[in-house]
Image 1 (cartoon, rainbow, N blue to C red):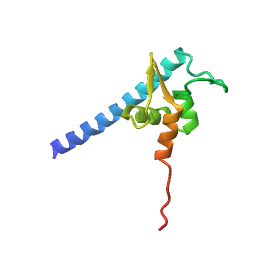
Image 2: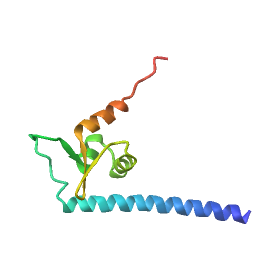
Image 3: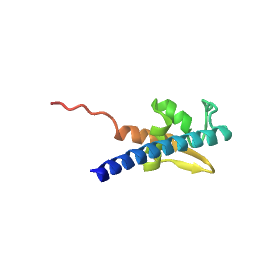
Image 4: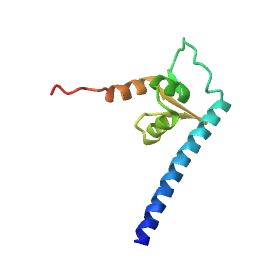
Length: 107
């Protein structure tokens, strides 16, 4: 019984550490982006590739950074790494949203 309790405690501790590491990773990436000037507003008129920064992606999706980073890390939302910056092509984001469009059942 003591072994089961120890195993349960170990699992809880590992889960807490994993969540803390995810938070640390998000904070580090946010800090890195602020150094690179990523948090600035994107000009309305752009030519060429339409790339979205992580803060812009979070704002457009209405989701938090940790949620966004999990999708980027898993490859669910395709991304491009340019130097130390991570960007998402708008066309890739639109395809992701289309794949996840809610389709209510007729039943």
